[in-house]
Image (cartoon, rainbow, N blue to C red):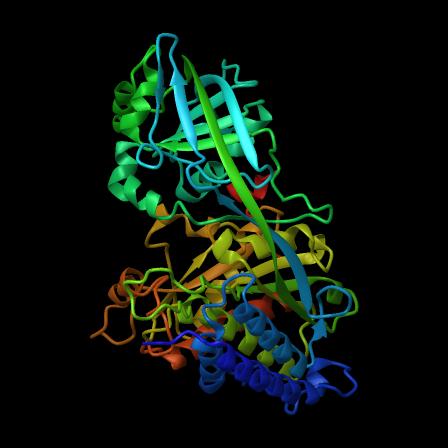
Length: 561
């Protein structure tokens, strides 16, 4: 059993860690000219390699019990941020945070739904029926107000999607101004997964732009097979977190959406009692691969909820290695890796309560720190500058990356590419990598060449239905127009007696977001060396190529607003 830190242990930890920071900081307290000049040794880029020992040292500290799972806003994550900043300073990298520091401090609002405050009733003109929370409907807290109460007519809007590219307008012919829209969860099966995932994440935008005041999402039988409604109930107590703007307002673009609910498919049938089609008719259309059309439901719904709020802060950590070219040094290749994890579990049935996050994402941060060391020790600095950002609050919805994309410490237009490092599963000698985003921009060429230098194949996405390209910290930068790539260890192992896909799958089934994702896993640090070398080579090639990466003209993501 891993005991939680008591006050005495925590005090000793902070004192010890302070000594570590002092030691590493003193090494970099002299005049800082160029990182390549301040490093104790330099190496030709062709002979540079990551160090397995360094990767292990970083990972074992970041994923230690002492950091208590690095939850956003926690003392453990603050220590992780200080450790990362100390490493950047020791390498001679320039601070790229706020006010000449390595830190970009972010204020967050954490919102909770008050117990027994959620109500949902339906008035069909003849009777009023109330749904049971949480068995029949779920809702979350408001990030704005302490109490919300709304009554409005319901309009069914199919999947609630709009796209000129795919010829979709589920709102065509419908008036939803001042009304609550009712939509199906998910998206049509014929939409490409990554593009569909992007559209799916924009449903609130589509509704708000048309004047809707609330959103009801219908759980479907198809969704029940993938993620039962009862599973969603388990996560209902989780807070909603948003970063705050300088005026203290939470970063939510659509304040007119004053209520929302997620309704079980059996209870959802009651919303269609006065409708021209039943909900079962809608589900039959979905089963046939059709996209249901919208219509007025001819009923009114009332929803109420009460919320409480608290504010926390947590930092991104940012540093720059200046480029050597007089012109290109004002452009940046961005490396990102999230430093947060999910903290301490409240599941008392487990003996171990600390979610260490070794693979997720101490491994990615360790790779980034080693990549930074390699750039700092290279004999020749890259032509473009290299920007390293350790982002917070990924587990809360990519919030640290989103904040940086909205509040960059360098001109966003000068960031030419993003190489994201998130959860490399370093448990076997991988023979291939999957590069999410490589098919959308010219970065694919850089990835293929870099992987080839180390005898690693570039494989296609083995699980496109997961739309992973839209689910990590590069995505906020993609939405801002920055080409990005995100590498994952592939499913082929160099050892024919190992099944890389099976090892990868077992990690997700048994260790992902569990206390067992810890340094005692059989981590293959030599595989980490290869993974780091590939990602370093990608960045160096992009930094030294005269032409900046560009989106491929046929890519959906080249045309985002």
